[in-house]
Every structure is written in C-alpha cells, then in structure tokens.
Image (cartoon, rainbow, N blue to C red; front, side):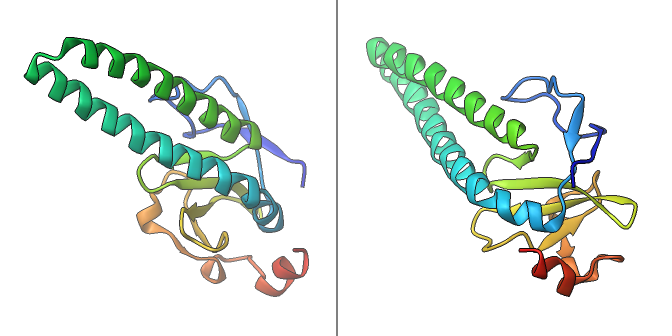
Length: 161
C-alpha cells in the first residue's frame, strides 16, 4: 500500500523539534508488522537514551547543589549529546513513517487507512506485535484490539504477514 496522506495532527513540537514532513506514509497492518522489527530497535534506543538524559539532568542538579561545577559542566555537555542522539533516533522513526507518541513508554503510531477510514495502529514497547488501534487524534490509553476495528479482517491481515 503506497498511499500517502496529509500529516494532520501528527508530529509537532517537542524534543525532536517541529515536524518538517508534510505527508506521511499510510501502513497496512501487514506493513506495520514488517516495519516493527526496525521500529522496536529504534524505540529501545530512544528509551535507553531518554533514561540517560533524565539521569544526566539529576546529575546536573546535584552538582549545582553541591557546588561541583566541573561535574555539572561535563554532565551538561553529555546532556546536549544525548538530546542530539534522541533527535537522530526520532528522525529515523520519521523516515520509517511512524509517529513517536510517548517518550517514556515507547508508544508509536502507524498511520493507516482501513476501509476508507484513517486510524492509528498503535504499538507500545513490550508489545509483541502491532495489535491495537485508536483514532488518529486519540491517545494510546484509548487503544482497542484490532479485531474491534470495523473493516479490519484479521484472517486477511495475518495471511499477508
């Protein structure tokens, strides 16, 4: 499925900066499953780097309180590197065509068109497969199993994997 759509509410500001992408790939469920191998690796790296970024922030604050300005300066330099690493990883996800929705949980949306309706196929770090969906403007907390998506035929979708 090589369809593209205008990037409605996807992307946006944040650590990754403004999304420069105007169009976003629409995934079939089978394409989302195939892309998941790469997406899992990138998201795992983002989660690791985000944890490192939080640790560095705590180190900076502790160094400032203790008057250890050299350590604080060193940690700030590492923090800048960490932010740049995360930006690069988010750009990789953008290149795949997925949307990182939550930095701490590793939630990713795959834009999808099912039966003429735009939806977001949703995957969260720890999930084995892309098995959930929600409205494009909805949150992952509102995700529902794929078999509850009108127009989605589980037998056909899994046959294409």
